[in-house]
Image 1 (cartoon, helix red, strand yellow):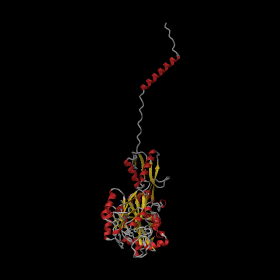
Image 2: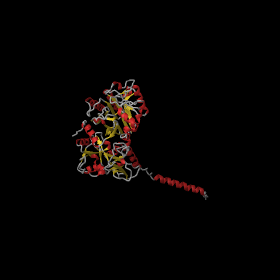
Image 3: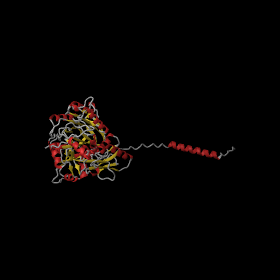
Image 4: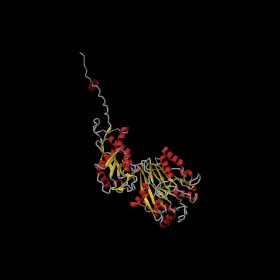
Amino acid sequence: MTDVQAEPAEDQQEARSTAADDTDSAAQTDTPPTPTPEPTPVGPLAIAIDERVPVEFQAIIEQLAISGTIPITIPSTSSADVGAPALRIETGAGSTEPIYRSLFAVAGRFDTVDTAISADAVYSLWQGSPAEDSAYTHIAVISETLPSLVALMGEPGPLLTGYTDADAVLDAVWTDQTTLTLIPFHQLTPELSVLAVDGQTPVENDNLFDVTRYPFIVDVYAQVLTPTDAVDTALAEIATQSGGSNRRSDHLTVIAMTGVTAMVRLTAQQMDQNGPLWAVEYVSDTLAAADLAVISNEVPFVPGCTTNTSPDNLTFCSPPEYMPAFEAMGVDLIGLTGNHQNDYGRDDALISLDIYEEAGLPVYGGGRNKEAAFKPLYIEHNSNRLAFLGANSYGPPFAWATDNGPGSAEFDLNIMSATIRAIKERDLAEVVLAELQYQESYDVTPLFDQRQNFRALSRTGADIVTGVQSHVPQAFEFEDGAMILYGLGNFLFDQMQGTTREGMVVKHTIYQNRHISTQVFTTLIYDYGQPRWTTGEERATTLDRVFGASFWDRPRP
């Protein structure tokens, strides 16, 4: 009989463990592995857009969807192939800050004399019941903006007509002077006159415009239905692309420009007696509020200059002690196309240029030599790229700069045209302002060759062409949408005879590198050198004559 010995306990435990491992291994071999699940595809973010949302904002979102910058889809109400929207864009009051504000300007045609209106008058016209004494009997809008305007103002009355585009609206406004328009701010053109609504003019900068007091703004809100990172990303990109408004104050530049400044003779006598600020007491605040205040100063600053009040005195200078008048007006740029720049000789003209330089005032249209005088002055403000240039057609020859001597730039149509073309072709600036000291005329209608030369500069590419020689206000013209101002009249000068007392100060609004509006302010000189703003009948007297002599592209009954 064979003896069988028992295994030690630890050996038995090891055997059981090995057997269990073998069993588990067999079981694992028999069960197929569970496949790793594929990630669920994430579809584009669905954004619902209310039809009353301003069309320019809708276009921004649609462009983002088309470009694929962020994955967006904009389902229609009948879409069945996309999920519920995670984000809704709508108008009306929201619980949060608006993500976009679309401002509508109230405007008439450019030759509007009374540029003020009340919000109540606009609403009454919209509803079809204007006051009996209303200057407006119809209202024109771009048809695609109507849903947004209805969201803001309610259903319109029978006096409203919709048009296909802004150009058709312009035609309607120019055909009938009693037609008003509500037009998106970014679609303004200088052929329209933007009205102040209860004192608020949106083409002014924020020094004079309070957006919180302006009534015609459509606010857009984002309602987040499903909070996700994708929604946050989309909102951030939409905000970046839209800038938050169709009127961004950081993209707007207001340029104020004046007519003849010559602080001499009786004007100088008054400034000597009353102080230099006397001359600009009534106009300085308005000019200083502009982003760029531009003065065409006809005469040099000459230390020791003495006042000669003789009406026969045509040799002009101003003492540097008058500079506080410029400072009060916030003058930023000096046009030197005047024919009196070298009246006291080229050495004193150089001293005058030194005075401007020390005051931090850049100049154009004149300079230390011919090269400097012909050179455009480039200014960038709020992303608006501007070029200023000027020339003197009148002469006399000793007023013109030479290769080695100071003076104004001698006008040569070929040179100036080539300069303007080069600015545009080389993308040196987007908006070109050309200025001419032309032959003098005391008539509201420009000289024949004056008109030919100004129009030639406009056709070459100048966005605004201004005559600064005229001692009376002269006509306006639009050349394919570009503005021509043949003469602004006197600003600071001692002429008090008839229409020489009258002047125009203009404010050009540049928005996103485009000239969109010009305001015309009228002045009347008092006491041989103090311009004051005119209103009512005095303003109408000036502008009716100027507008009546002007040349309009569009029909004007």
